[in-house]
Length: 332
Image (cartoon, rainbow, N blue to C red; front, top):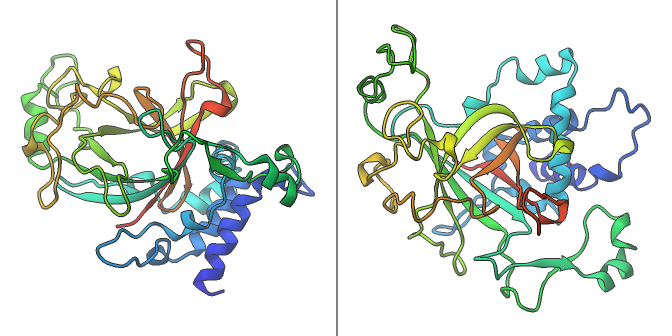
């Protein structure tokens, strides 16, 4: 199959995931089928070539219909029930850490897409266009990809794109950890215990107008690879967390070393790019959920799907219609 057909096959499968009725439900695993389809796409072809200086959004994300990110999030949960044979087939030679930087100063770029994202709480709100839905596909409840349109009070163009730059702060990580007392018998670790991997941070870059982005916003978060429960029991768990400064586990109150928030000054940022100076107090929450953390799962090689849980009208209430589903695909 040519590349375009491979991309169309993977995207088409994701778009109809919630409509599939397998003949043998016990043997069917949607995560396995999604992963293998994405894996067939050559890494260099998972994103478009773009036209300089415009960014090149991942081609797979371009092909997904509205509603597909929710499908992908639900399907990714099936990874937790993979049988041993298929689990070894997919993960014997790969690791989550392969998709993220591991050396000081290293930067990996991801392009993202989200659904139900409101810019500053006012723009880009989407609702089902019921007339178009019923004319072409039947009632909204019967289709996996409802037709969406902006509300009258929203932005003219729905904001669905963003960029995420994952990086390891430059400098001598072992020296910073030692200065913070790691391995020194202060309760953080036993003497001689090996250092944990250096922390991986991320900058979220939101769109502004056309090809321009909001380059001045210092929206940073910390990546945490950890199997954890989500706020909603039906969604089981997540593989990764994006922790913003307000989250206690992000180490926003501490400085340096393992567990501390390392982004305190411009010299904590990798060279060679235009990075806004860190300001944890000004940008301490997720721009997608408005909360201190977002959740992600593995969806395929270099592709991750996430859910930003937004609280409903009552504290602690998380309704599915309030969630913001997003996916990121590695670009460089």
